[in-house]
Length: 232
Image (cartoon, rainbow, N blue to C red; front, side):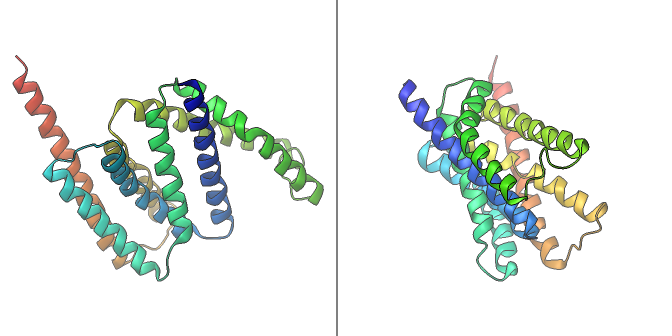
């Protein structure tokens, strides 16, 4: 099993690194809409992977919730006007990463440490290349920036450890639906604090996504209550 775990972690490392790299590139090149779209497509792919690879079953309410969310995401995607390659790359890499993490029986922190070690040599080579080109920020600007960059690493690692721990305990489809919480919070921050525009199309697609979330949550609560009742 250890050899299988080794290759699974290696694949996980490659996927999560691709995800980060594409995300940072997209943000720096002003593809903000596509990055947020990626976060909305990702849960749907997680749900599908759970159904096809892990043979997870959705209740009727959850199937309806999935279709509602998918409709919302399709509206967003179509309104974007062209095929959002970056969004799909982000969504697929992270969803498959989740599927791999679900199969590995390794402690979450240890798993992430090994994944980071896999990618470290590539990161160092890339950093040296940036440094020689005069494009590096880390260690070549002020101490405040360096500390911020180190803190960003910690802020990224913590949710990933939590995600790895959580995804081993709950079905993948559920992890998928829960992933709508972060982009919804990001959206509120964007609209309220950064005064980003929120048009009719946004409202329409989010109405679908949020009703899907509501339906999913209610159906889960009813399931839990039924289970409690049936237990003596």
